[in-house]
Every structure is written in C-alpha cells, then in structure tokens.
Amino acid sequence: MSEFIAWDESFAVGIAGIDHDHWHLLQSLGVCYAQYRDSPATYAAADFLSDVHARLAAHFALEEKYMRRSGQPDLVPHQAAHAALLDAVSDRMEDHYDNDQPFDDAAFTAFLRAWLIEHFRTSDAHLVAGSEVP
Ligand SMILES: [Fe+2]
Ligand SMILES: [Fe+2]
Image (tube, rainbow, N blue to C red; front, side, top):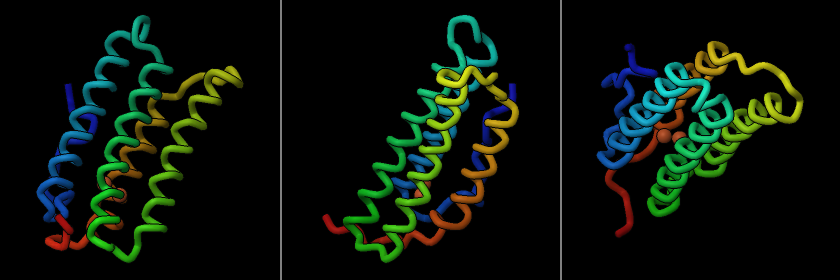
C-alpha cells in the first residue's frame, strides 16, 4: 500500500526537530488513512477526520512554539495558515455529521496532500534555522 505522502527530501527545512516532526506527521497520517481505507466500519470518517485534526494541531503547536522562541517574523500569518487548515478539516467534519453530507475521502485527501506539500515547500521552508532560544 502506498504511503499517504511519501517523505521527500524536498520537504526538508534544515531544522532537525521540525523535519522529524514533518516526517512523523506524514507517517501518522498514513496510518490513519490506511486504517480508514481498510476498516471503515470500525474506523469511520469521523474517526479519521478527528485524528487528522489532532495530528495536524500537534504539529502546528510544536512548529509555532519554535517560531515564537526563535522570534521568526512571519509567525502571525503562518499561524493563520495553520488555523485555516484546521478550520477546513473541522468544516469537513461538520459537513459530514451536522449536515449529513457524504465524506469524499478522495477529494479530502487530495486537498490535504496538496496543502501540506505546498506548505512544506513555501511557508515552512522559510523557517530560519539555528536561532532557537534555549
Ligand atoms: Fe507551518
Ligand atoms: Fe510544518
């Protein structure tokens, strides 16, 4: 089974902790997606979306802490981009559960893949290494 998003060196931002957490995020999302595809009766769209939201939020919290501590200038717009993705995920949850819309996993995963790859290669790539305050 193919990975959700295979790690690619073009995602590396040159900060060890961030790069590891990006790798771990992709691994975690892959586990969730495989579980959803293999066992939708016991691990439903709601479970998948909740876990995706939680894993993204955990990564964003770590990255934003790094940005705050290292005084990076684009913290506010970067946080806003993270928040927008979390809102997009929770919007899908509301569509599915509150509004009874079917969950289109192909569309959702295509959106999430594109967002993450673009974000790694643009906003995250601008993170400045080596300036973390102990
Ligand atoms: Fe980011
Ligand atoms: Fe990131």
